[in-house]
Image 1 (cartoon, rainbow, N blue to C red):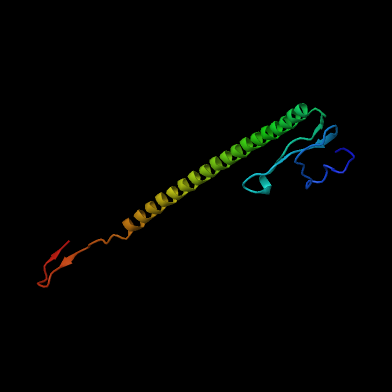
Image 2: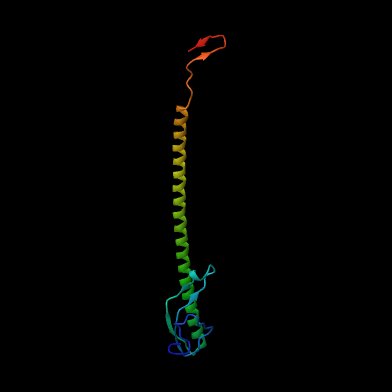
Length: 134
């Protein structure tokens, strides 16, 4: 309640129902299953409760709908952020694979060059009887 016992600047205050004929300023926290760092908060809402039970129920339902909408929008944003991070990781992984392939190609080329230089050259062949071939 504005100026009343339930000060909404304290995050720990929770209300299960609203007293008829009062004005409230509140925001709704939606707890995320992955932890507090993903929790979502709605914008502040100021509303007055009616003494008519039907109107009061409709007002409470509207606030719950606003909170659900906000949570959905934030969940979509988290999903988009996760997708973008996955795409960036895929790009980095592809880049790493390309670098490894390039290193492998360079190593193979260098190895072939060294191997070609190390091939023995036969200058002559001599048998035990003294015959030679050049």
